Image: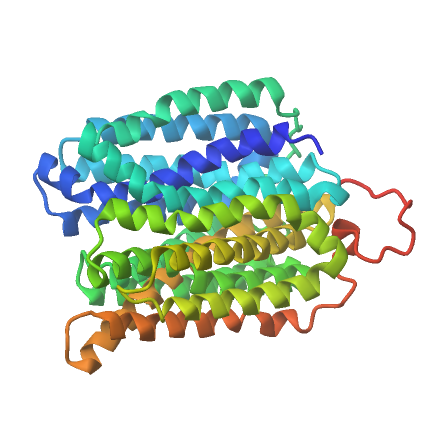
Length: 468
């Protein structure tokens, strides 16, 4: 496999994923500098997620209309400009607006990068390519907190955003130099009603869940936003059925392999999405560790994720998608439940060992579902599959954080005490159960599903495989 393409794409995704978590550690310092409160500043985190939710659905149309490579390079530039605006912001409104611009760039970078990768990679090499691309999505959130704490402590918070500029410039140059020129597909006119409805649906759900889980606004606002999002989603489904070329073609869900990969992966992310939110809180609130010490512990998951990329292709070739996904899904759920047993007296080496294994297994599941999403998709459907997959990821991750935070609060409420070790025990067990439910749709997956991608039990190993 030519690793140049996934590595170039991974650099941009690493920048985006790390940036989205590194800011959390620096919120108090940023809030103090611009004259607001950390709670109010969480609106900036929500603004970024809302921007992603609005513009991800249109990313596939943009790539088909103007060419994936051009859109990807432009997205990096927009993200870098948004980073400069964040560093220059002197008020809450300016900072929130700058994060929204960053989200516009991020909304195009992630799905378009995956689109470039799938269209330029033969099916038999897709698992390896996805493994390289998945790494930044797992490493970025893990190293974000310690990096943010280090920069804020020894420099200023402005450098959290300014370091994106040279990385972005390098990414634009590398993409222009090495990425293949994927011609535009000649997309038709944009589905404006569909864009309007999908934007309200996705952003309403993401915004509402973010407000409920991180209440910078009254919870009633979040509940109203979620209801508006669900209503808009219903009307979008009705709208898409009457359009020849809808913005998001829901007919792809008629494909059982695609449907299983999206549904199973979404349920899994609801559980896993809460882990990066809960673990640092457990280490800091429960164990009294500093943000830097907490970040160094959670970084152990990235070690396991990195090791996975060497073994994922062989593992899937031997076990096949169905068996590996079921096994990794159940094992990941068990390892989440193990987090409920951590105490302040648990040896750090044991915590690190468990998190390394958890990172490996979780990354294997993510790589497998990402590859399975495109295993049975026709070339003309790749851009639509990419956009739908990206929307599902954002909504499920936001839902995961909301569920984790809500369970934590409810456990503390019913216990009659402040959030403590018992509250985290209940929260980890709850999200472990949710993650385990991801295997239910996978049980219906055919044993031969995705064999052209995994290489598992091919009838004729020498039979040529066509690229996506």
